[in-house]
Image 1 (cartoon, one colour):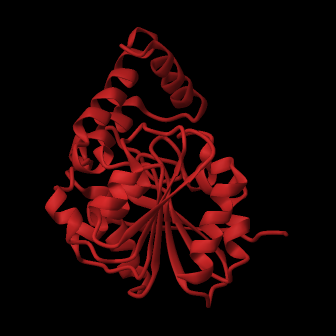
Image 2: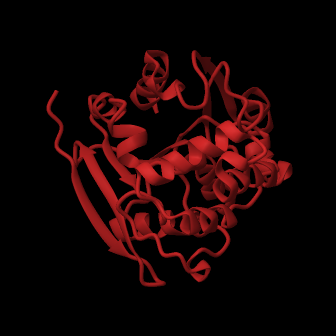
Length: 256
């Protein structure tokens, strides 16, 4: 299936130019799709073939690049990275597009931002798909942020030397600024368990069976007000390439 992708840019209230890509049916149900940390819409969703699969559901697919990532601006100045700004950017994008009735998909950092959007309450998606996320990655983000900060700052000398080496290679290969990446980490907020429990939007949590990077996905589903969990083969990095993950995502979009 040949896919048409169109990339647009919008200006934020603090003057940055952020990119988003659209695919699928322009008149279809809007679906906001959020990528992971140190990734982009292209890397997380297009290259594994997930956008092509999702487009077959007749959806309008809206895939932003977070600030500091992909084709969006990535300033090094920490002033451009206040708390919760990634969620605020998505609210601004939806407002610019005039989209109020939509579904929401996120993986890893994108899943955390999906929960932040739900917790903030300024937008209300109809249904939500959270991939690559567990309870700790939502309610106690500090541990995961410290892990990445150590890897970015110290590379092969990080406490987890293999992770540090891998992260440094990603930054170099993708031309990403370590300073911007560290600033993105500083934007992250935990969502308290009581707020999580108050979220009653239907949610499906889909995780690799070997993925505990962000904690327990079963516990995350149990902690939400209206959620279920599905495990698929793979770990945090490999699950998105698994046919079972693709099938779960397409099934979600087909019925949501």
